[in-house]
Structures are given as structure tokens and as C-alpha cells.
Image 1 (cartoon, rainbow, N blue to C red):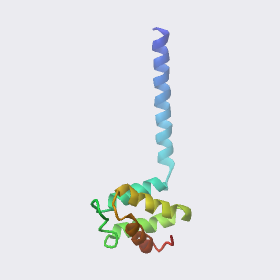
Image 2 (cartoon, rainbow, N blue to C red):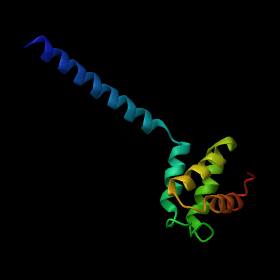
Image 3 (cartoon, rainbow, N blue to C red):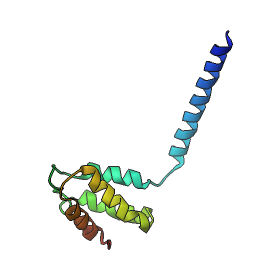
Image 4 (cartoon, rainbow, N blue to C red):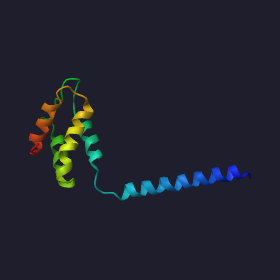
Length: 108
């Protein structure tokens, strides 16, 4: 074998080991990150270009907010809510954020 083939094979082995380590670390992590909550909350929203419609009607959003408040530190709560609303790209962002703060009983 040529030295370039050996070097390529060595790089592939290192990449495979690194992938295994990353997957292992993700499996060990029990709690979710703020980014996970942002994505989940965004997935629960029913919205169009103007506003989010199901904030006060969805039991799933309320449960997610309660779970977030238990698992995450308080300093992350407002950013999770704001970023989830921002990800939806609606025009009435502040109204949606205010409704979510009221629902979660969080002061802005």
C-alpha cells in the first residue's frame, strides 16, 4: 500500500472513533439542552406569516414549558421562548412572546 492510502485509512478510522464518542456522549446526556426546547416548541406552534395561533389552546405547549422550567436554569427560559418564536418568523413576535411568558408565569 502507498503511504497516502495508509494515511487515508488512518483518517477514516479516527473519524469513525470520533463519531462513536460523540454518539456516546449524546446518549449519556439525559436532560435536554436549550436548543432542544427551542426546536420542540417551534414544532408545536401552529402559525402563518402573521401570528402563532395555538399558544393558549395547546396543552402540549403548556407541558413543554413546565418541563423546561424544571430542567433548565431560570436564565435560559426567556431566551428559549424568544428564540422559538423568532424561528417561526411571524410578524407578531412580541404578542406571542408575551402570551408564552404569561402561560409559563415568567416575568420578562
